[in-house]
Amino acid sequence: MSDANVRIPEEAKDRLAAIAAAEGLSLRAYLARLADTLLTPQERADRAAAARAALQEWNGYAPSKVEEQDLDSELDRRLARVQPR
Image 1: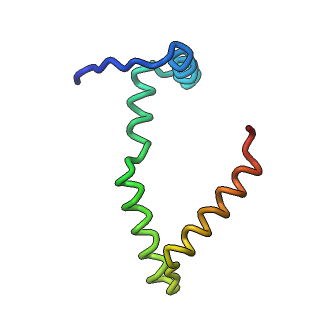
Image 2: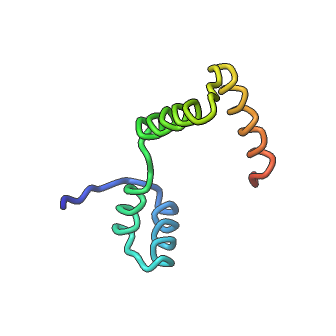
Image 3: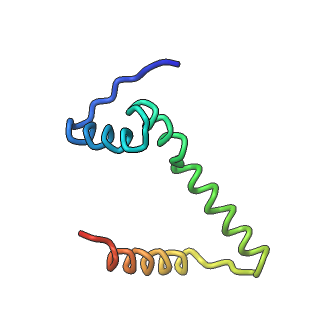
């Protein structure tokens, strides 16, 4: 396994190291696990397409692009109300 050097602010490194330690992991192990759990933009797009296809097959639901944008905007609005700033 090869190593990589990543330059991040010291505060970010300290925060990640504290999170890793709280989970009983080294920073290296934590970052490797994190990388395994996150999706790339293409993976997210593929999953979204699969979900849309499953919904359409299951109940005929096939929103237009405008409807999708409206739903995304509504979700963003609702999340903004409950997320701390």
